[in-house]
Image (cartoon, rainbow, N blue to C red; front, side, top):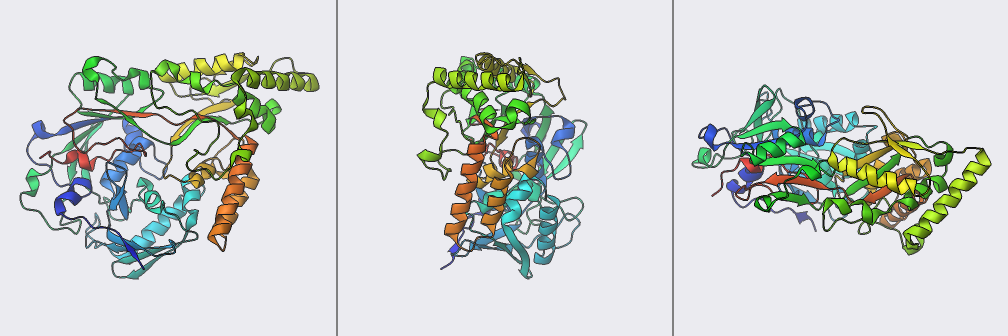
Length: 493
């Protein structure tokens, strides 16, 4: 039996997510949205996008599917889809729309463009995620099939990534069109008829333009407080202390229950950090509960291993043994390892530098880490801005909720630093597994190998925050930390 997606019940619902239309009313009806970043980073082209650029790209260029304000997959170029029972085939029916150059949306054009995007992403961590795709083919005039090497329940979330937008046509066509004006952009909706959808009655009264303003976090908070912005997107733990905390701001600070990687990558695995035992010593020294105390947060979950418990395949015996020790006991073990290393290698001092973003929150994190490392006799200093360090703070939200995302992020081919080629080979072998059971076994072994190798010193879950006025609709905190612009352009009822 084939499972079918539920189509939108009304065109208004589709408009609210993906088919917003041209500017109506006047400037007084616009919604002003600030996004943390520079104009160059927000409006960047190419395939390596900052989170801010992902938000912009998702508004102006459609992929087969997109994400709504709850980070749920919704129709975009594809008006509907089915998934076969074995979970290895996704069949999409395309809407009868047009690309930006006026050419019709066809299965052949979409399949070819998607294959090119996947090929262009080769060598990136997203490219490793997409290695699960076995084949993309045009089945009929407006039907595209994507075959997978293994079942992936989270595949639609992966396919919805803005880097996979179909950019054929000049300009590309998405839910919104943009007009740049200096450092800002005015986003207006695309005529639903060009998107292959009927034009609703009084459609122009349903939507409003979105003014997108790139800002640094401090300026964005100031503009929001002054009433110049209705929404501010893109807050991280590095800038969280800037978020307004007074009584009047209660309810406007929105926190996402995001998952991902927040911790330390060892960029220079040499000397004391060449072996897992050395990297583990630094991990044992960290007071993860105390790390977040100065932020006045509730619900933040510390984590000592890369993959969250609800996604992990490991049993208790495969968890790091030191996690059952007290902080004092862990630090004593770390001190002994340092003393043994110094004695064996004739080094009197072991010190490290760490590259981190700027911001008051990053300062708090650095001070806490410096104190933790000092407790075992290791000086820590910040690398100069723009320079690499021995260590780097990684703060990244997961694109989809699966252990494989975490394994791919820490792969040897995904960047510099400590890694495990053996774990990478197990992940690749899993994609060629003949049975689902074999696939699961190989991924479990890869996770166990990566955890034991201590290639990443995990601290906890990422923090993402936004500001949104109580009256704003089309915004919702979500686990992806992703807030699309088209729903914000829908006029509230």
